[in-house]
Length: 435
Image (cartoon, rainbow, N blue to C red):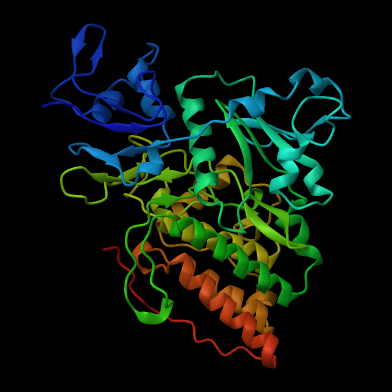
């Protein structure tokens, strides 16, 4: 038997995937054991991990074996680097805070630098090209340069993560709810400068405005899931949607920024570097199944929690992981705290608490909503809580699509703005299955 696992984003052999066939380690072939069983048997060994094992552990998702999995669309396997525009920037000017300043180092892979793009006397970036494509505002004077952190090597894995981020932002350009990208090369990219983030704005919003932002975030997720997917024009038609080929896979409050669109501050989805581009069986066209890695129990769905024996997700995944994550964002909008912090009365989720949260999710547990919020009579807050409950269903097939959530939240918002009362009936149980 030949071992055959396709792994995205982690191999010295290919920047996109690797097929382990007849894997060799220490001069002995591995044929009869599946790769994961082989790795598990060596987990307690004092030896250094092989390149194949390191590749498996560094991947974002692991595709099912025994299938010839290929990209669902041509755009998933291509990219359009614009290295000239990146290289026009004199990186030595990072020593000058007039032109460059570090604005964020929270990301695991890259730092974010604020760049004054209009200082043409400092570096030869062509201002005319910039101005011809973008509205004039204070924010347009700046961009964000994302660069690889020094603790990470520039290798096929980091190249692939940056490629996925660039391609993802390129294909969702039509959405007003995603960050704009201006240039990309290797592990660096030049992106839109954000005016802040949603979690910083929330304390200043009234309930009706919170509902508006909740609807906008849901629409942003729907735009992501709509890339390359055939969508119905009427969410309430009862017909199922086709397979979603593009999954964000890292939706959380830190990845929702704020940016100006026609003078209005919109929430912008950001950080697509671990997004999943779905694959299909080359022979049948059916979607290939995959398991995830590196689950954060506080934010990720029950099916994403890892199995101790191989550190893979407990179930095969699809775009419904984004829907569960959308529920977390709606929780934060409605409650004010991040999910699970009210359960344990803490300001920080420790590794020990994460383990408890993972076990709770696998048993069907949901984060507690404080009584004063759950028992509110405010229609805007109730609309957000209804959408949150819909997203939090344990069975991913019972979760709605992002488009359904956006449709219902928008309908609630319009009803409240029109007559001060909500008139949308949220479904209590509805099966949504992929076809």
